Structure formats: structure tokens, C-alpha cells
Length: 268
Length: 269
Image (cartoon, rainbow over all chains, first blue to last red; front, side, top):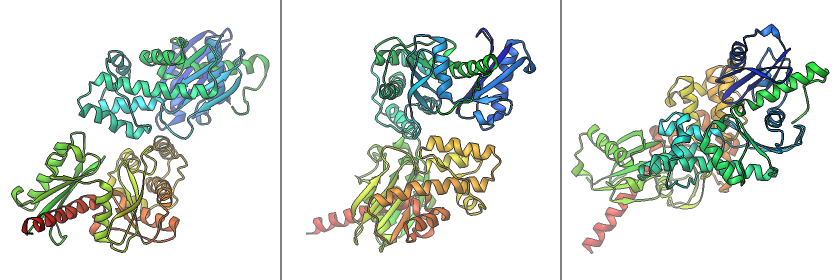
């Protein structure tokens, strides 16, 4: 028996196909773009392809993320807060705090041992301190996102970013370069700005170890190190962390198939 | 003839105005600022001069203003953009007591007195909500140029609603409206209306007193002027001949004339 979770995020769409034993057979990832439904289908198809199964083999699909209501093949929808919490506890059972840094939003979630949400905080009004800040750096410096982390790690004398707004950050980055600062020092300054904003959000929800870091920005090793440093202990991440929301959605799908309990739930 | 140049190095665009001693504009030029402020200043001045076959040696004084003014080494004098915007607007629209300057990354609300001095101001220093960068990105996404937005937004039938305050989130909302097949005109108008609401809040915070004036690159958008007037209960006047974007450069050039005159008086005294 197979289930799937599809996480249509603001920037990227992630999908996983998993078995009843929680084994992930396939993963799919694509940019979300403007057509949310298409992105959901594309990511789901990619996950199916890797799993070597077809759509009819999947018993239930749960959608999550900002575009969850746009995917027409989903059987149920669950908020990304619940899915990240569930996914994080599944990947790292001792998780009590979750930090998810996505493309446009950052969430700090306190969870119970069975993955239920106790409290959460998110940047619902302003994009400061989200992955989009890295996007601004990538645009301003004309460097691919994937190169920013390794570059930051070579910094010797990071700049201190003063702007909060993501729109202003792009100008500030170029302003630092115009003043003759080294690219790696500027990139590290951007990383520090995101990390400190995210950890402040986490503090507001209350940091309780272990802290699990989820979302696309987990692939950036400089950010993982910085957040660990600021939190004061190593944060959990692994290669599945990017798919954490989709994994949580898959687990909710599995609940529904196994127990008949509706995956649909109130906020969060 | 005495000739001065005002160079306004804005966060998005660099504007140059060449102005004679009567306040008449001889030439204007505008280009994207980019990140080499000194080059932007040099080149803008050069083109403004070439357009009217004026030689550089005919310029008696250069005043720089705007975000990048310290990097413009060609200036004889640098003046804050608040002072320049207030004075430039005052000379065009002497009756105006509250000016909203809507630029690419900065929005300024200024109270000015009867001689064009700033008495109070508010800036969007922490957040880009209400600034023009958002409209620029919207039209670029739609495949149009920023100069098309006035026309497009005026032809809207049923403007979309944009509820996010953050420019980054608002862009996503715009993209979703387009994905939902809303008309380009309705999306443009929705973007303009959203921006108007944010900008109007800034005006309210300076305890705005009419008559109102609107300057900056966005002053040419009629829908913006109309909506601002509606929200704040009194119409917004705009500078003549679509020169709204040059308020800072014009003010700088006029203040350069004042400086020159004072110097002449001192020398002859």
C-alpha cells in the first residue's frame, strides 16, 4: 500500500511516495511558479517515477503548503505547520522544536513527542529572514543559490547587514561590494542576518532540545552551522529534511488509510 | 545665462536637470542608477548636456542629491533629497503643503512651508511596502515596461485585491492572480491600488494638510493620483509636463542657483 504527500510551497513543490512502513520510495522536486496545480502534479509525477509505481497504486494523497488547495488530485489537505511538525518528529524522534526556513516563510514550531503542534510562530507579514533573502543575494551577485553556502564558509570578516526588508537587502549587498568588501564577507553577512532572525522566531516559540531544522534551506551547510551555533547545540538535519513537509503530509495520509481518521484538521 | 545641474542619484533611477537662473529647465535625462554611482552621475550629466549641445564648461554649479549623492564626485555641493524634493515641488506647485514622493525604493511624505522648507517628514526606512519597486516587478513579470502601467491600470474593469503588505508576498499574490487568468489591466490596477493604500498611510503619519502634491517616478500614474485623493479627501496636484520624477534634481539645481547667488553677493560685497 502506498500513500503520497505533496507540499506546494511558495517557491518549491516537494512530493514523496511512501509505503505503509514509512519507507520513502520516491521524491519529486520542482519550482512552484505560477501554476500551483501543475507544480503539484509535476512533483508528484517525479516522485512516482522514482518509486516505479503509477498514480492508481497510491491509495491516498495529502496536500500541504501554501498551494495545497490548488492540487486537484489531493484527497485531503493539512496545514504545513502540522506537516512539518509531524515530519520532523518522524525523522528525528527527539524533536521538540522545529525551525522551517522556506522560500518565503520561516516557521518556528514547538511539538510534542508524537508530533502534535503545541505552539508556533511565523513571519506572516514580512519576508525578512526567509529563504527569499538568499534569493536576493543570489540575484544581486548573479551567483546560483547552491554556491552561496560554500562561499559564505570562506568568509574572514563578514559584513553586518543593516536592512530588514528583503527588497532593500539587494541594494545593501551591492552597496557593500561598491565599498570594496569581499563577496564572501557579504554573503556571510546575509547568512547571519537570516540565521539571527530565524533563531529569534524560534526563541519566541521557546527553544526546547532537540531542534530540528527543515525546509529547502537545510541544504545550505553554512546556514545549518550558523543556526546550530546560535541555538547552542547541533540542530538535526539530513537529506530528507528538504521534504519534511511532504513526509508529514504522507504520514497524515497513512493515518487516514490505516485508521479511517480524517487527515483534515483544524488550524494549525 | 547661468546654468546649474541637479543630479539626483536615486535608489532606482538617476535623474539630471539642467536649469537656468529663471528656473527654466534646459534639459533632463534619466537612467537606471545601477551600482556605480559615480558612473551613473557622470553619464547622466554628459547625456543631458549632449542632448542640447551644451558644453560642460557652461555649467556653473553642480548639486548632487539622493541616496547615492556622496559617491557623485562631480558635484560641487551635496544636499539631502528631502530638502531638494521639497524645494523643487514648491517651485512648481507653490500652494502645496504636503508632498508625497513615490520612488523606486523610498517613499517620502513631507510637510512643507510657504517657502518650500521641510517642516516634518516620514520615510519608509525599514520596509519597501508602498514603494515603486513592486510595480516595476509586476509590469516586468507581465512583459510590459514601467511606462505602460499608467495606461494599463486606467483601463481596468475589475481590479484584483492585493492584501499582503510585504512587497515580496504581494508579488506572489500578483502571480497567483495571473495564474487565475485575471486580465493584465485588472492586475496592474490592483497593484497600483495596493501601493496607494500603503503610501497614504505614510502621508497620514505626517499629519497631512492639503493642498497635496505627488512627485517621484510614480506621479505619472493617474489611477494612483486619483486614489490618493480619494483616500485622503483632497486632490493631489502633480508637477507639469510629466516632470514628477525630476522634483529632486530640479530642487537641487534651483538650490545650486541660490548658492551661486550668495557667493556672488559675498564676492561683490
